[in-house]
Length: 585
Image 1 (cartoon, rainbow, N blue to C red):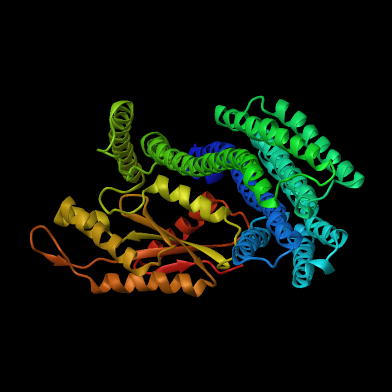
Image 2: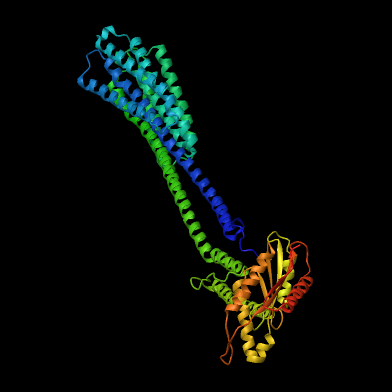
């Protein structure tokens, strides 16, 4: 098995991919939950902002409606207004301005997406209120005789035109709140109907102030207008009753008080007052008495409206807190899941994947013959520890097997060397020489032009053995072998092929190179002295025969040996201690 398995195919890489996919899926689910809760939180926050606009609009409507009564009292009385009456007007105007300011601030909240489109209607309503107030103040400056009821009523109608403008803002934001949080629909419907009821109740009182202040009989137009207002109030009562279903007990209690104080007591009083005012001379009731009797009943409408708005706001805030908690919880869950997954992944990788990868690396290394890798000895338990223990045993067996294999190769090498080497001289023997020489003769690669085969033989070697003994003869053979090794090049082949007979095969470019080699050995041999076993000193000579073969001619070794041997024999015949060679072809 190869040890260089690509990393992309490793278990570690596949494990990381699997973990990444699992993490992406889990994270996607958590992020989806987070996105859903974040959207819910944004919707709740948007509903809260739009609720602030709607609440301010409804309260501004009620304040404008309430502002008419003290103003009407001042304009309809024959004498100049008292400080108390002027203070009452200013107090109501300040309350209205406070609500308009709160509405303006709510509309300019950057977190409200739909509020910018309502700035136009608000500006127009605020401008209408300012113009109507200025006109009413101009009328109040004139003597009572110079004021006509028609002018006063027309100016009041201008003031009340701001109420529908504010009502449109309330309607738009109420729909926005319901769209973002449907749980508040019932509360807002009740509050919106209560606001309309508050407007009509204020309008009803304003319609009675003029005839009461003038101590006169109701005109037919005033009768008709009052009848219309009472009809609208009755319609609103009809709409409010079914909207109470599903409302909490506090609102039921408020509506019961509203029904008693307004629909029962206040409207009964208005009917009686209307009957009295229909007679010549009008009703014997002043606007102040009307306000004292009628005002507390109208206050029950405001309380019902504010309680309904309060419940709606509580629901919105509860939703906002819930979604905020869910957003935070989702974020914490995402962080916790990420942490847990990373921890589990790290533990799984350290305890399972990493040991497996390490075991794989060790197995591949041992399979490729690398036994230097260290097997972990600590840090694991159970099956992983057993696995590494088995790998360590396998490594030790592999080391022992490798040692035995190396020993076997060494022994085979020694045997091969012994088979190819002459035991006495350490040179190649005849068999090894023939194998190497045959290979050289068949080598067609470029190099030297010729192959020279040099045969040399010690002269009178038998005489040396007979005179000094065979051991001394062996010394002579070893000395000649040493001289041949020193004189030859690394690529030259030298061997002992017989008792005192040696041969050399070398590549040369000319016959002179082979002759120089042979001459160098012959000369060195003259310079050497050999000490016999008995202590005697003697010299020895050798005869040489050199045969040449051109490289690439596929010359046969036996033919080359035969020719060199013939030349060696010729050197012996010609007096020994000489070199005989054939000329190059």
